Length: 162
Image (cartoon, rainbow, N blue to C red):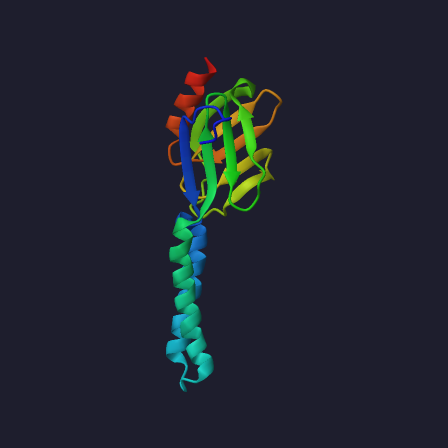
């Protein structure tokens, strides 16, 4: 924790390895490689490449379990959303929050990871899971933040907003 930052009340990290949509795509590709390798009649060097690519895809899937895509941090005064690939942090001050509620992230089971994606009148943040926190700000912006523990986030925001 940075000494110039407010006290950290909650910290949640979401990884790409637990995203159902991405995992399904990688699994289908790996199975395709293994099936194509199995049905290749003359096991040439090209066929062996299919087997190697299938193994690589499986190893990549395992490695992605440890790659943090979305980090949700709650301090004394704000919600901070950050990710691995850009240095931009999204900060939502508790004083700007008009309403906050727990909801389902999407009616679909397979969802793409999203960081600061503006879609359907909402700004979406998501890596994995099915639950979310819906936040409406006083300036009219709406945020949908995927979370494993939306009730905990709501509880902290309400406690700190008093």
